[in-house]
Amino acid sequence: MKVLLTGAHGQLGHDYQILFKKLNIEYLATDYEDLDITDIEKIKKFFKINGKYDIVINCAAYNDVDKAEIESDMCNNLNFKAPVNLAKICKELGSIFVTYSTDFVFDGSKKSPYIEEDSPNPLSVYGQSKYMGEADVLKTYEKSYVIRTSWVFGIANNNFNKQVINWSKTKNELNIVDDQKSVPTYSKDLAEFSWKLIKTNKFGLYHLTNSGECSKYEQAKYVLEKIGWNGRLGTAKTKDFNLAAKRAEYTKLSSEKIEELLGEKIPNWKDAVDRFLVEMKNKGEI
Ligand SMILES: NC(=O)c1ccc[n+]([C@@H]2O[C@H](COP(=O)([O-])OP(=O)(O)OC[C@H]3O[C@@H](n4cnc5c(N)ncnc54)[C@H](OP(=O)(O)O)[C@@H]3O)[C@@H](O)[C@H]2O)c1
Image (cartoon, helix red, strand yellow):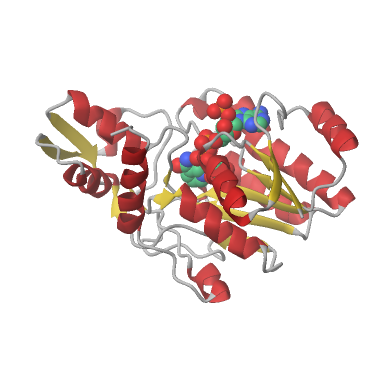
């Protein structure tokens, strides 16, 4: 079996690589420099030279939610048009296609965990780009997986946990928003459970996050307690920060569909943060 990874230097791409090494899966890891997925000519040439992969996993994305409000073309090219182009090529070649979406496709008005059948209503350019991408991919190719996840953290790139750890090194007081709730998701667990899902051949749309839920404030509090920070942690509101993109208050995704399919529970986000902190320590980053 041959797997192609795009965006492989990011959080999820990195953890797929670790997983595939462990499982002895043959893979090719590409990122922006070797395979810019927004460049359709480059992509066509790439597949002409390299031939068919059994599975193409797209980990590349435009994830800067606020910048996307002014860079909407770049965001749409990467999150909407590129996955659709990859799905078309996979259809031609008969490869399974996997791509990722986000809890930002929802507006937060539901107040209970979102399931796959709930209607999206994105509040931002980023959310809209992801929604258009997932909808068109699913329409384009029946052997596609679209996996929605939330608040991803891992060793390979920047994320909220790392930001909190960095702030803790220079600040004695932090105020973190308590009016955005969802679920932090460890990219290691995301890769592992995605891979289990991919092997089922039950294509379609899935929600996949660590279990539990929390606000950004609760997430930061957990991390700061674990690393023994002695400063003062207070709460803030999203409106205090004058962000370019609108945020939903509650976007927890329910992973029940995938848990039922796999017959397995996904670990709680606190357990995931504990393992992430060990990984950070082992890498000398804390
Ligand atoms: N991060 C989150 O909190 C979050 C939340 C919900 C959903 N998701 C989704 O989960 C998936 C994985 O996210 P992640 O956190 O692992 O993302 P990430 O760490 O930002 O990684 C994305 C990777 O894609 C690369 N890339 C950028 N433009 C590219 C291009 N044109 N062609 C090829 N590669 C390109 C990036 O390179 P550079 O770093 O050089 O730009 C980066 O290595 C994405 O679909 C994301 O939207 C993420």
